[in-house]
Amino acid sequence: MSPLPIDELPPVICVVGARPNYMKVAPIIRAFAAHNPPIRTLLVHTGQHYDPAMKDRLFADLALPEPDVNLAVGSGSHAVQTAEVMKRFEPVIDEHGARAVLVVGDVNSTLACALVASKRHIPVVHVESGLRSNDRRMPEEINRILTDQISDVLYTTERSAHDNLAREGIAPERAVFVGNVMIDSLRASLPKAVPAASLLAAAGLDPQRIEGGYGVVTLHRPSNVDHAEVLGPIIEALHVVSARLPLVIALHPRTRANLERFGMLGRIDTPGFLLLPPQGYLEMLGLLSGARMVLTDSGGIQEETTALGVPCITIRENTERPITVEQGTNTLVGVDPAAIIAAADSVLATGGKAGRVPEYWDGRCAERIAVHLHDWLLAHDSKA
Image 1 (cartoon, rainbow, N blue to C red):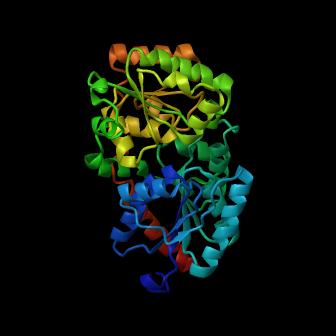
Image 2: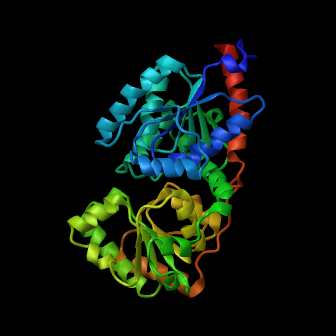
Image 3: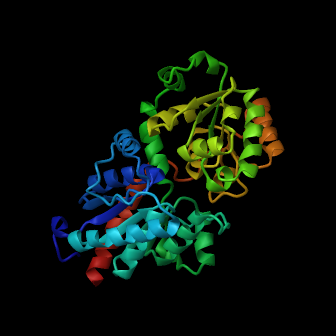
């Protein structure tokens, strides 16, 4: 047993840095608090995504407590941002101590805080381990691979992740299949989701335009939106689809800036598109759950649409979430305009892939993490 009472132990530091992290950490924080005995936590926000209004909105939507520490890192190149997170995170460990550092997903903050903890000989816990796109041109892929290599406990969302970890030489006993914690947030939040018609009305748009059904578009990945020769054909394909089904776009700031820079914004300022500013979690959940189809390059939305049973067309050449294609509602089409249009036409004609909800995507992932990590930490403490 641990030599110290629970309330005297250092905290498990839980790190969030970007929007997708919030949906993963919120149920974990709740599960740690509800565990008997509770697992003491310290919530650190690195500030990698630095829009204060959006942060506050997401925290409120997810009932996530305000961070105990905000590193306020802000933007920068991958190297600058990673280094700045490391520099600002280490003093947090000095001040508060850490029984373990729990990181989620694949953003720069994930790798940066894992590196600091590992070099300080503090256990690293990685939630959403083992996912691979096999495309090392993606910064997220580098973050995933390196974080998994230095993690002591690796929680996975799908069983295929264990094969990826084994190929990279990671001992099987370090990996634990617990399911998808993002779906915990989705299931808990779905009753509070904001209907699409309400969102359009609040934005001054006519809700009657979507009475016959609508699609949702999200585009933000640099490989898709940073180059005119890639973004242009994608927009043209969406323009064709919008003539057959109204498309609601919550336009990412990066995408809007590039559309303006390339002179393409006018192509989506047409009757087939309904433009919205970036939305909160409950608003996006309402849009997704009511859609006939979703066209996206987001990893998280591939999972959410599979959980909701909504057909998803992923505008990427690869995915680190193959279970959404193999078992779920996701179809991977690449960036070829003809393939995007054909996939959308197929959904309109047939209703799209029915799919099924994968194993352990049941809303209880965070509970499984809390039970396992509590026992793991006791065993680790006893050896210290």
